[in-house]
Image 1: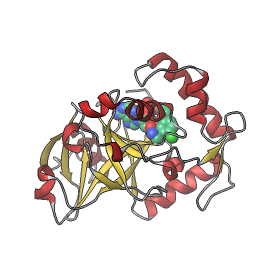
Image 2: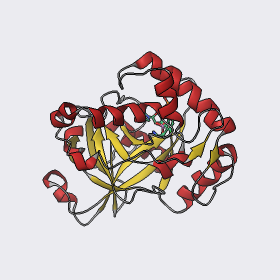
Image 3: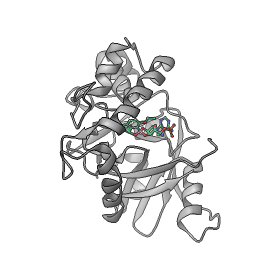
Image 4: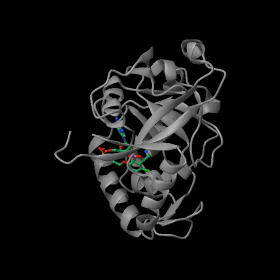
Length: 253
Ligand code: A2H
């Protein structure tokens, strides 16, 4: 963890009923994968959620109606931030691994795709954010490469029990124009740098640096209520709106 606290937005990705056997005890409640993002203005372009197959997660009771799926570590941080500023012990209703989450159907705020799926990503860190990441392959190089890996490697899909229809129909959704990189900045930068897979860490770090900086300073939104506005202006407005509508909450660590 860095010296500066990192301010994330937790996006509430709602799990669509009926639930698979592992989650059936939660039926009747609203269950969300809680994804930590630094780019709330990109939520229009979500194509899936990412989970770490071997990662340990839990379904934690947040209030009478809502349940969040995230790491235990994040649940504790959240309890500390949300309630009374005293480390409270959040109630874990179900113990889960990433394998239990792969294939969940989700409805996510602002996403132009009505339904998206939880899919495996092998580079997720469990000591950062919530261990759940929402995927925006138009603007996030990690997301673009991980989705590209799943699309281009049937054996990888088979290994994690990923069905073709959870992946293949999902195209990159152009949401932000960056003059230098076009409307699918992550794809362009990954191609320019000849990145081979989600495990190509050094090149992905460079790709992230390039797209993150230019996206923020020079990007313009192409969709949604803030279409035509600069990313810099739209970002805090979109974040506030997501929080006001209860579709997201603040989270820092
Ligand atoms: B970002 P930082 Cl469009 N493991 O959200 C790996 N990556 C994680 C993570 C974890 N446990 N938790 C969050 N992240 C990702 C959107 C996005 C993000 C875009 C572009 C860049 C970008 C859609 N994915 O991040 O180390 C999340 O992906 C570029 C770094 O705290 C989160 O924001 O700076 C970002 O990494 C947080 O990374």
